[in-house]
Length: 241
Image 1 (cartoon, rainbow, N blue to C red):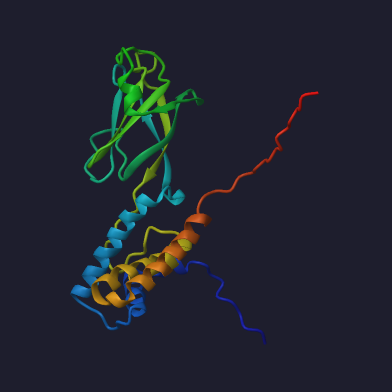
Image 2 (tube, one colour):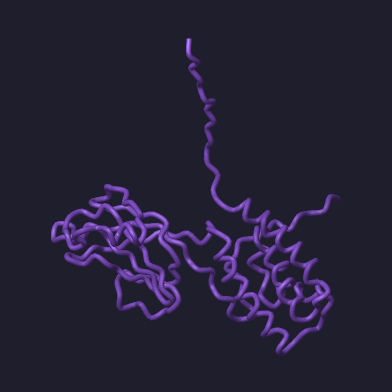
């Protein structure tokens, strides 16, 4: 009789923090860890997740939200690293950056152009009212703000800005938690933690662990995202006759 399969594909969500730490320690030759070794591993895992934010866009952390416009208000605050922004109707926990935005009026969207600080500073009259056409994002330590131009007037109040934003990867938390990471990133997550731990407990393996980590992380980043159709058109030349 043929063997049966498990019928499940949820290994990543059943893979708890303590198991990740255990596997990472085993890769550098340590077993039966406890106490401070567990705490320092959990801290290193949190640091590694923060370092991943510098590796580019992680598509599983892209989310969508709306801002309800208020007359004569150009700047709206979105808290990202504190959970106490509940008094602000626009606050979204964990926001790290805004990718794209549209002005929405009765479910009709008009794309907005994202500008940088210099372009916003060059605007001659920042209090001009009307339908917003541009937005400027500022990323502070404890919050992210989005400033609109033009400033919404009374006719724009109640309409919304629909935007896609990048969330921060959630903290590790309890040892029994699962990670806020898709299954594709589990191999490089364990390899990365082993690399971080090797720097503390087995320096002779640092270079080896780093090569394994970077290789697996590169494969995961290449696989991340959403595929779309590509069209290649050859360039046409018209030589002089």
